Image (cartoon, rainbow, N blue to C red; front, side, top):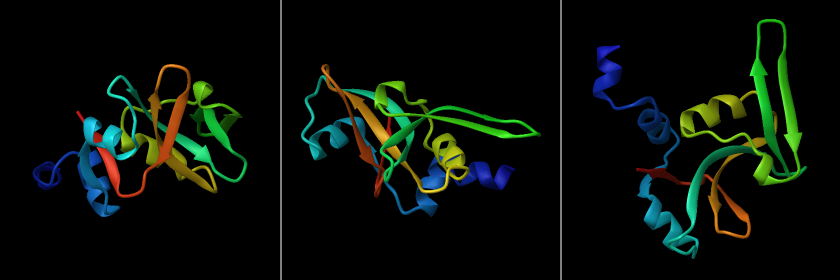
Length: 118
């Protein structure tokens, strides 16, 4: 365990393994042309083909339960990219997205080479 701690947090190790770049929230806003007032909501699991967002998830010994919603407002939000990735592995065809509230709507962007940091 000590060696893993020296390599960084779990989020940092997962991001490194996936080839993701460390970006500030401000840099991500600029990259996507979002206003400074856009609030980071966290990460979500998204089924691109069905255009649905994971709304509820539980993994018990007897069964895995997943409920899907059509809008990002109802999406289950993760503060940690590692949590979102762990859950997405139980959802065939799912990707992890980052979500921002821009006031009148929630916008989502797939995690492709970037992740937010505080």
